[in-house]
Length: 608
Image: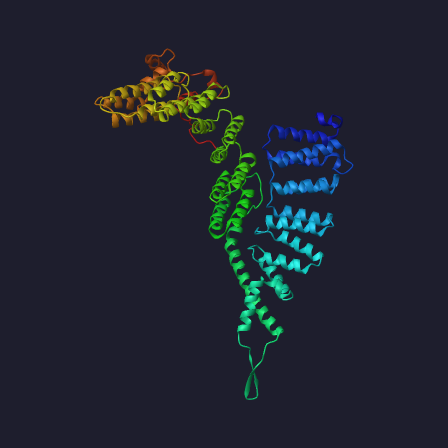
C-alpha cells in the first residue's frame, strides 16, 4: 500500500488493497477485476473534482489495467468516460471515448453514447455531424443499429434540417436491420414533400421523366369527340412521383427480403456482447452458419463487418480468428488487414496457451519478407511459455528455411542447453534434431548417433523413444541388410523394455508396433520372437519376465517370484501395515505401475 500509506486506515482503501491483491494473484479471474473496479469507484465516497490526487490516480490505473485486458467491455468505457467528465471535464472524457471506439469500434451502444455526449457538450453542428458520420461508417450496418440511427435523426431534428434527415433515411432504407419498416414509412412520407431532385440521382430522374413524356396523354370525352389534352408540369411531376414511389417500394421489398434472410441467424444470437464465460455450442454453430451465409450472399463490407461482430462475442475462440484471417488473406491487397487480425488475436484476445494462432502469425510475416518479425514472435512466445516444444520446433524449421540446416540445429542446441527446458522437452527436441539430420541432411548415421549418444539422458521421455523406434523401423531394407536392421530395432526395443522409465501402457503400445514389424518384415526366426513378445506384453504378470526383473530390488526375477508367493499372488505390492491402518489402498501402486486406475475400495463407482 505504498501509494496510499497515509490512507491505509480508511476502510475503502483497505478494501481496494484487498481487491488489488486478488487481481495480482490471478489476473485472469474476471470477478476479482469487477470487485477491484467497484472498490476503486467507491474511494472517498465516489470520485469528483474534489477527490484527492491519490484516489483519482488509483482509479484511473484500475480502469486502464482492466480495459487493457478486457477492451471489449463497452459499458466500462462509458463508465470510465463518465468518471473522467466528472473529475476532469469534456476533453478528458472525449479521450476515453476515442480510446473506447478504437478498442471496440463496432459497438452501437458506445457510439450512441459518445455521440449523445458530443451533442450535449459541443455547440458546433459540423463537428457533431462529423462524429455521427464516423459512427455511421463504423456501426451503420449492424442489424441492431437503430439506437444509433435514432440519435442521428434526433440530432438533425433539433436543427430542423429536413434535407439531412431525408438523406439519412435514404441510406438506412437500404440496410437490412431490425426496424427497417419504421424507417421506410417515414422515408416514404418525407419523399412526398421533398423536391424531385433530392429523390433520385439526376440520370435516373431524367429517365423517369422521358418515360412519362413518351406515354400518350390521356384523352378527354367532349360530346361525341375525344380530345387529347396536353399535360401540364404539375401532372408530369405527379406521374414522376408515382413512379418514384414504386421505385422506393422495390427498395423496401429488397430490404425486407434481405432482412428476412438474416432474421434466422440474428434471432439465435443470445449474447451479442463480450463476456469471459463460455458460449454454448448452438451459439457457436449459429455464428459459423451466419458467416457461411454472408460470405456467399454479400460483398466485402458486409462480410468483414459480420466477422467483426462475431469476434466481439467470440473473441476468446481462436477458430474464428483463424477463419477471419484466412478469409481476409483470400481478398486481394488486404495484407495489412490480415496483419491487424493476427495482432489483435495474438496480443489481446486469444489465451497464450493456444499458441497456434501466434505461430500462424509468424508464418504470415515470413511470407511478407519480414523474417525479423517472425523471429521476434517465436522469441516472445518462448518468454511466456519457456520450453514449449511446438514453438521451438516451429522456430527451428523457420531458421532452416531462412538460413539452412545449421541454423535450425543451433536453435535446438541452444534450447537443449537452456535451463528453461525440462528433461521431457529436451528429449523431444533431441529427437527433432535427429529427424533434421535424417530427413533434411539425409545422414542416417548422424541421426542414429544423436539417438544413441543421448538415450541414457532421456529414459523418461516418451517422445524420444517413440521417435527412436520409428526412426529405425522406417529405414529402407533389402534382403542383404534386413538382419542388420532387425538387430538395431531389436536393440531399441530391448532398451525401451529394460532400461527406459516409460509407463507400462506406453511400453505395451510400442511393443505392439514391434510385433507388427516382426510379422511383416521379420525373418524365419521372427515368429519365435513374436510369441516371446506376446507372452511378455499380453500374458499374465506371472510370465512377464522383464517386468518382474524391473520390479525387483536386486534385478532378479526370482526375487519377485518369492514376493509373489509371500503376498498371495499380488506381485509388486509392498504391504505397508501403517498405510492400511490409515485407510490407504495397498494395491494403488500396482495399478499405477500397470498404467491403470485403481478401482474404488468398495468395488462400486463413488458418487461425485
